[in-house]
Image (cartoon, rainbow, N blue to C red; front, side):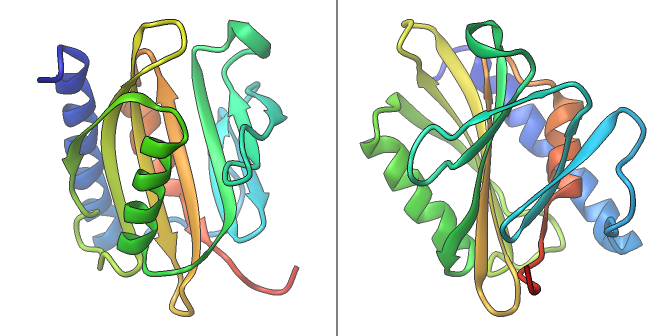
Length: 184
């Protein structure tokens, strides 16, 4: 059984589902400038907004090649990891493969607590899960994993992790996540 942090992560996923359904009705976000207080990050096929002032840092594995953190080094409490060219899959297959990798690559006591496709989206093009795990420090952390794919199945992954994830941050990442496999 997942302790208290699971309830917060489930609430964050519910917020994302509602927000995404509203965005689907409005046509989503475009490729213009980032919203005030945010910076647009573009790498490989992925485009997403992170809070201004977040520090870019090295990747954490072959899969997660770029990360952004709320503070540098060990002072970070929240991290956004990118897999900007994950492969050619449907989004639901991307989530399934990435979940298996997370369990094998050392996310101790990994618990998938929710699996809800983004409302109004087809799981072939967009899917995400919420999860908890125990870090190297023995503390429990929350996470949300997104996979997004375009019509050609160019798939990207975005993972947000921290001791406690802010619902507004989760919603903003979900709302601004885009796949663009155009010429680069």
